[in-house]
Amino acid sequence: DGRLKYESMAFVGFEAYALVATDSGLLLGHRNGLKVLDPGSTQPRTLFTGEAEGVYTLAPSARDKDLVYGISEQRLWLVRRSADRWNLLASPSLNGASVSEVVETGPGEVWIGDSRGGPQRWKIDTATGVVQLRETFGAKHGLVVDPHSGARCFLLDGKLHVISGDKAFVFDGKRFQPDVAPPVTLVDRLNELAVVDTPLGVYAYTSRQLWLRRKGETQWQQLHLGTGQAAGYSALKFNRDGVLRLATWDGLLQYQPGEKSLDPPPLKLGFQIARAD
Image (tube, one colour):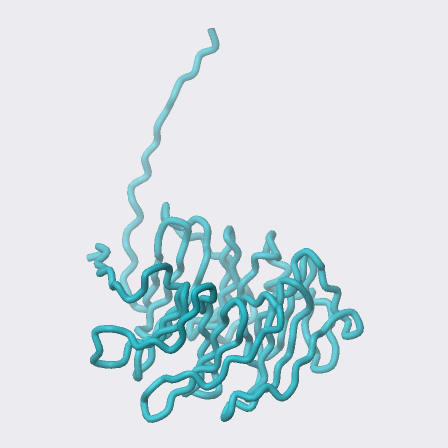
């Protein structure tokens, strides 16, 4: 009926930053660590507790269904599932990097963006959690890093893209080349650009713009959402229930394929007369 139904769960004392739902439990990153709500349990099990180190990003591996990457202020977390139970595998140090995302580009190969410098490529033995190689990319690799913004990464059509300041680059396997193709060329706030691949297509968005390249198509279409809550796009995700959800500054929008669209509210016009005496 369109009405919001929710229940507050007292699982953490402060902010919950990231959730990943699986058949073996709900992983929960929060201000003071990482927990998992096992199936059938009423309270989550603690995987890690840190007084000043919260897990604010959780990214399931696209190549290993039993592996989830996590990011905290100081470490990259590898959470592995064994016998239908999630446990910590390893937590290598970020060595001072300030990381916002982890992008998986191959088995055991991830890139991390760093707001303090160039992007890093890590190669990890995901069976043991041992980091085998760390590389930081910069000018000698064709990448111009803005010292004030560092670098952010995203994956599109199997290629790694990096944004730094007002410039964008794409990795050709050896070096970075200027990125002069959509969606980079479509947005007016490049430093905010986020790209999410979903079963419905690829979404690219900033706080003010939302673009979609549908499955099987090459053209991008700008979406204009006719609702008062469609302002300030902040996070987009396609959930396990088959619903696409988009968080905004003051609401949560959702789209389910096949669901009947609601009629827009009637247009109301108002007039005001101002006089200068």
